[in-house]
Length: 192
Image 1: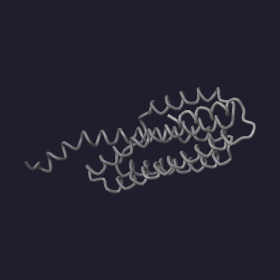
Image 2 (image 1 turned 60 degrees about the vertical axis):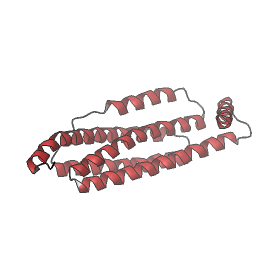
Image 3 (image 1 turned 90 degrees about the horizontal axis):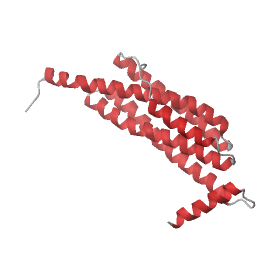
Image 4 (image 1 turned 120 degrees about the horizontal axis):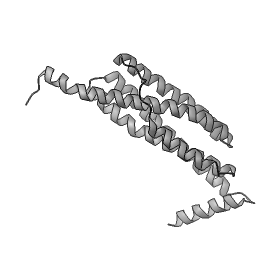
């Protein structure tokens, strides 16, 4: 059964509201993430990790700008939603980091924190991309797809960096107790 144009537009209203609400959540999450990355970058002990975080801050700012551009085309404000999930995720992880005293352990924990935040975002972008397509917001759909692809590349880079830091920690001639514990954990998990 075909739906008239007016019926279709009426059905779009709840989808449009959901789309805008989800975009606001992502906008809030990306802004929180950018602020957190700036702080985490200062805590990183690895030069490569610090440089990676700085690049990620720049990328995150581009994501925020893309979202702002989408809001502008929708004639909507991006403000109004505070994404409590991202704030809680970051708070929980940073509390755990306070106990990490060894450089490699701290850096790996920082990467895990950032990856969790990235995955939270990666879960949201496919949804808003689908909504944009269904609503005929083709330019927005392309921008959202571009951001999602960048999130995936970033996740792969962070994984590689974490593995490098862990391998370097395992190859130390005189490892600290924390590094020995990390080595033992990795050897145990590799044998599982």
